[in-house]
Length: 213
Image (tube, rainbow, N blue to C red; front, side, top):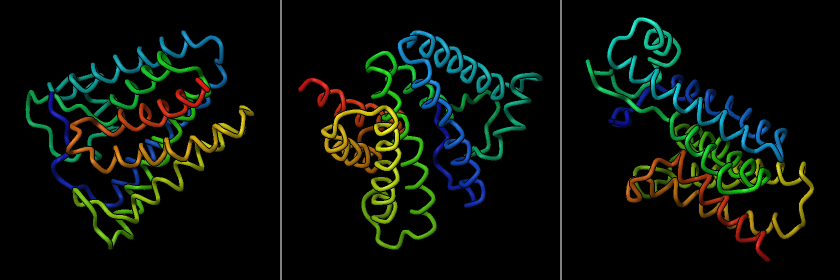
């Protein structure tokens, strides 16, 4: 499987990509609403992950049904033109895989907060970084994007924590979780782990440690 990340896309297509990212905030709501029925969340995200992978494989092989629909919806957002037979794994699969894993590992409010960080922080980093990023850091990324991730990601996390009504210490630990997640996004190339996958695991792990005290 090859992830399609070598060629830059236009800023307009980047906005569309991150719009899809933000539309996935329904996962946060679903995780919270299902609450103690977390096994349903796991089944839902697992099924969607499988559907996404099958659709992407069908698209790579010129499928007439799922592949064609996938191409119409997301084809222009891919960073490279798909070569015949090449299986492109988009950012959607790691998002769903992360949603599945955090629901398996953490209680619902931690899983929801971790997903909120990834879905909002990553979008902010990409859009702010590309548009206003003038001070470069590692891997061609910018400090503007890095701090946008922290500010927006923490805001989303804090909103989830506030809705649930957790103790104040979670808000303090959450700062560390978001910073760790931002670092994972910054060093994605070195870590060789998709940031859609690593970000919620990092932020969720810090909140989980907090829950042990």
